[in-house]
Image (cartoon, rainbow, N blue to C red; front, top):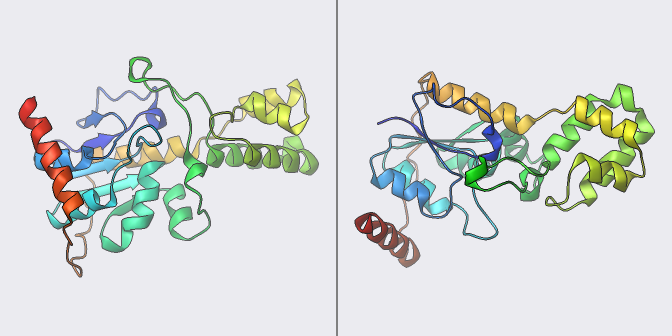
Length: 236
């Protein structure tokens, strides 16, 4: 079975047709479990839904690991879950994962964005804080220290739904010249990490066996999720 990758806005515009990977929309609660039940052996988690739907459960990941499934995460929701589940054998990829794992980032919202629906390819509609900070830092020599501070404070003060270059520049009290600099020098750490994860799965890179020095603890809630997913599969 092909590796399965759950992704959306982080790989917007990527030519996926040439890759021997089964791409799925951003994951929500139950999607990883359904993939395992369908026979997946390697799963990549990049993007995931939240807010209007329940996010991927940690329990799904732990269950998959006990079933011998390789779970790789990075870039966005995948980086969060990988940092949280790395001690149990989930594999994390990229700078964002490392920042969460090492405690240099702690807020889930640093990778959050708003995006268009599936019909429009999950096009990103706002900028993740990780990418805003990386872009501002990368353009620091052009912007100057004072404006870097203003822009960073502005980016960090905005809710992820509202965080665009235009709103960041306006919040910082700066003008069109700064907007042009940021737009022309945009850096996406999320995209870079996502492409790295996809490339590793496409190249069939070997992954270490997950540690089994723990026991999966079933719960009535996980049993209910399994029943729901089985019923959903039967209905299809």
